[in-house]
Image (cartoon, rainbow, N blue to C red; front, side):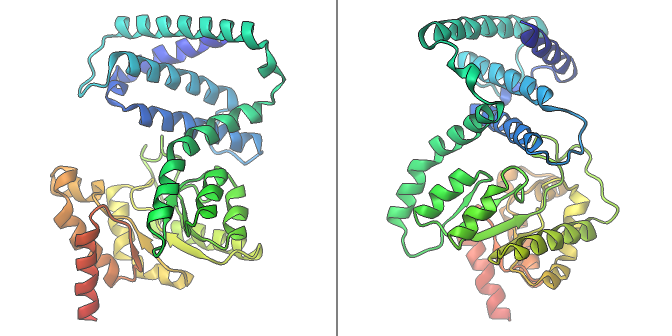
Length: 331
């Protein structure tokens, strides 16, 4: 009851600040937030140095509240605009807490309190691993079975998902966390002699765009990537592709500065991948919708290729290939 009381208090405070803006979120987005919280708990459990003065308990409260939000979304459906006032939200919160508590009591009756013998780290790992692998395993198998002559890449920061994908024939792991969320991912990729995309991100996905600041954004990213590459090389890890992380903890001006100075990343002597497709640096600058960003994406992709990009990460593959063909003709 003390845990729920504290979780409820935090929820009410957040609701006072932000209202019911979360009502527009899809279930998968809320599950992603739960996963991110679990990943940070794992990092704290592994004694990784923290820069945010919040401990595991705060993150567990976050998991509880995101879970209740997801239950409300399942019950009420997803909306295009926030639609509930504070009183309605709290009533739904309390209702789902009571129902979940009753379910827990019934589970305890049937199974006993076997979960009480589990380590906290085990509970965290269950959240992280089960969610992602359940979602992607069938797709990994289908893609591996049907596309045998191309290199397949998967976005994941979980070592068990990476291992499953590599074991089924995938070639590249794209890890936005650079190993911060699961350092075992390096060993997995190395064991399978896979490729690894090393990306820079300031903060975590749930806070990375909260006023990101750098003294020198390009210099900061290069120092991070160089240090990480050296660490990996010392452990015998070689197949590294670097990604400056457009849009991951950067302002619009930061993104354009990175693009302007992209050629300087060649000093790291690694293939460079860029992900500019439909980014807010395009549609916010042009004051258009994300789905109207193809022309802007193509323009920036050409500039990126001219400045040393080796790989383009895109939504619109046909148009990106046309950019590459024209650029190669020019050169």
